[in-house]
Length: 456
Image (cartoon, rainbow, N blue to C red; front, top):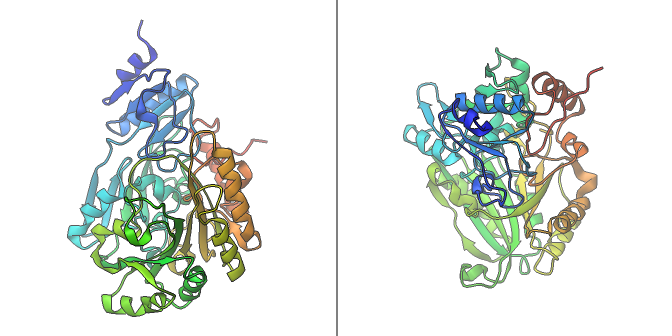
């Protein structure tokens, strides 16, 4: 008699395997090493048909399904069930005449960037191009060109989705419009996207990089940056990242052993005007390091220069109407070298095109937010609850100014009330109704689930 995995193998082109109980199979790890998935069956999908077959198999056997391309944003682990690994679905097709690209389920942003660059085009990719393009976009997507062009979700024109029945649907503004609305900003609760068509923007080069400051020598750096953001045009997208660097030989000498604020900028315009706009930031205090330059968008990863090696971490995020000086000062004090856990603080300037509803509305919430604020920490096994408590106490400093949260920058499990806070109340209820229509039993295990609306 054939085992369940052997039966499934007859219906897919990709590899099917059964990990051992000791967790030695690393398929469930991904980039986020904390609390990996431990599935009963792993399907390395070789095409959309494999995804449909795996979903149908899970539904028939009464088990759940998770999908993973890179695993950056995994919130909670799935025990048992079917894990669909989409890393082999990494194709990109660019249509330069329509300024569009078709992106498969497991594609990373860098693949899309490289495919579009020869045509002088760029996608609405994020600060770290190693993340999966599809999952990033389903959560909204605030990237390096965000204030000029909006959310990545605003630029989706078509999707192919496998629903909980195993059926593949073509989804657009004219085909399954409710599902199209929900998937763009509502996350992965509604199906597995096997491919998406996105519009590209005419960006070939940017003026970008970062200025580094010692927080001890320039304690008002965040306040100064916030004041500066109120003066810039929407062609300027910027962020501030603050963290304590260890005193180790692997750290660049100017940053070694310091509590450092990095002001990252990405400007869509001439180098000359970019330099003029950034000049007030140079006047905030002594600059430890300066990486600002004109660069091709294909090198956009260097703006934030984020770690590219898998590690274990957790992070929380909120959306603000604007922090004040005292809140920022207290935040810096409590996240410095003496903090009980290493805390990386990230603040992103929003507004501009992010605040405008796209031609085809979507589920992205809180477009009126002025900033996003996140705190992220490396986590060792067993310390997760302690770190979560630290993060929530820090973010509570900004409670009077908090509008909600962004799911894209939340790395960890959330309760139903916390997921609800990412959306307008009416939109959240609409999302629940849509999930009830496409996945009433909650087949899909996702990072931040939208619960189906109960009938009756």
